[in-house]
Amino acid sequence: MDLHRRLFAEWLGTAFLLAVVVGSGIMAERLSGGNTGVALMANALATGGGLIALILTFGGISGAHFNPAVTLAAALRRELSSRDASLYVLAQLAGAFCGVAAAHGMFGEALFFASQHVRTGPAQWWSEFIATFGLLAVIFGCSRSRPEAVPYAVASYIVGAYWFTASTSFANPAVTLARAASDTFAGIRPVDAPAFIAAQLVGAVTATLVFGWLLRDKAALSLDLMANAGEDRPVHPLK
Image 1: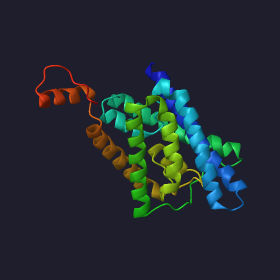
Image 2 (image 1 turned 180 degrees about the horizontal axis):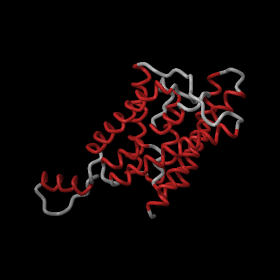
Image 3 (image 1 turned 60 degrees about the vertical axis):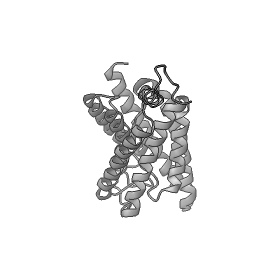
Image 4 (image 1 turned 135 degrees about the vertical axis):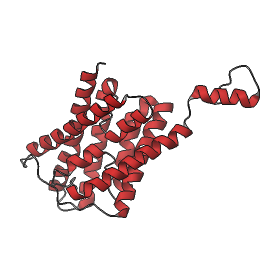
């Protein structure tokens, strides 16, 4: 697939992702009658459902990153050139803000307005590290063993992480920046966004390093096994 179409897919997919996250947050808050737990559950389930559909839709075109942390990991693993990775991130950022504007338009809100939702402190930052590390772990592990299950595994993880992290698992720098422009249930104060993004990027790099070791290339592993066994014939790495 040529680069222009891949970039368009990243822009459009990220836009729809933010429309799902922010739009479902607005709807959940309006319908939950002030019950934050109900609102969070609705927001999480809608996000998970949207992720499955979007990854299945765009995965065969661009890889369905929708996330600079995922793109950074791909670049570190040399699956994407630094130039293409930079363009992916720009497309994701543009798409994220377009998605926020689309969600606000659907609910009669101003297209952009700075969030007042406080999300800060060591517990929140640690949560974002854990959330992003876990997301990359799921992607790396499932891509290796069950690639057809990646959309469902990623969505399931995000739904769970909405609940087991104190930050409700942003795990995405583009999502974080765009949600700073939404003073709704899904928002984050602009002043709180940089620390979230830093934690996410550290989590992504750490996961890339850990799983680069944990899931070594099969060919390299086979060579190691052959050397250790003193054999000249290939050895299946899983046996």
